[in-house]
Length: 111
Ligand code: FES
Image (cartoon, rainbow, N blue to C red):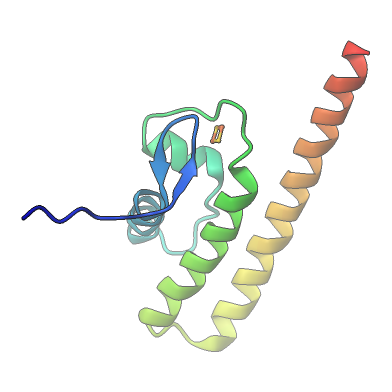
């Protein structure tokens, strides 16, 4: 009997599952546990490109959750985890806002 690994599809443009993305995030964190991981960095590591970028908000949530879990498993002191996760959230919020504004600007230019 064959057993299939079932994982939620996160990026329908590139057919990438949640477990594939989590594995890539962990691999990046193994290289540098304190780096700022972005959706672009994940896709670059996977040799794909964001097309519609509709999956980016989910990717950001996964980056934050996976990074936090990674540091808890590694038993990083709480006093180091919390400011780093807050910095991650702030940076992703800033990037998401910029991306949405660019999308709105692009739509207006077509009207
Ligand atoms: S859903 Fe991921 S690039 Fe479109």
